[in-house]
Length: 234
Image (cartoon, rainbow, N blue to C red; front, top):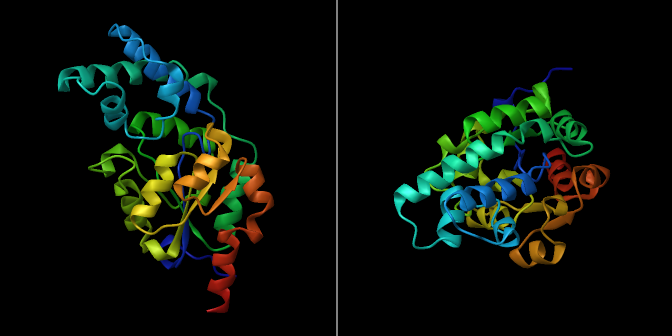
């Protein structure tokens, strides 16, 4: 049986990485908290966590609205330095590789729609160890504006050669849901990043599951499975 290349796949699934495939949301919150503390700011870590998933620039502007551009760069550099110390502690969520493989084996293009820095994304890709299940990926260099703007999704779709109407996005944050909605991509949200089902549904998530394993268990009845059925019937 011939294997389709990414360019031949007509539909696809985009995955956020941090908090969706890799258990890293709280590490990011802690890294931002320490970055702010280094500059003498005491920001509640719960407030930081609720903004994880935004681009770093927007997270800073939201929490420290009067910061200067120099301060913003200092915060981002400090976050990056602190977060790198957590790399050895990062783990994938249960069944992540099986989920990615199931989507790929079903004939879907699979993209990592990540806005992480290149070096963080490289660590994540090694952790995922998903090989040929991933057809394309993005980093912060691929987007002019960060989430909740849809730039990173548009960049990933372009790399996969897909239109928004032919894709589903899987994320864990309200900002992921908003980014998908901006270009008409339905979003499956996972609560493993620490955001409640109610908040994700209120933001507009099409479906909500606990984690990648839970989604995998319901893949056939999810909107991913329905997309496959429609593709076969077309």
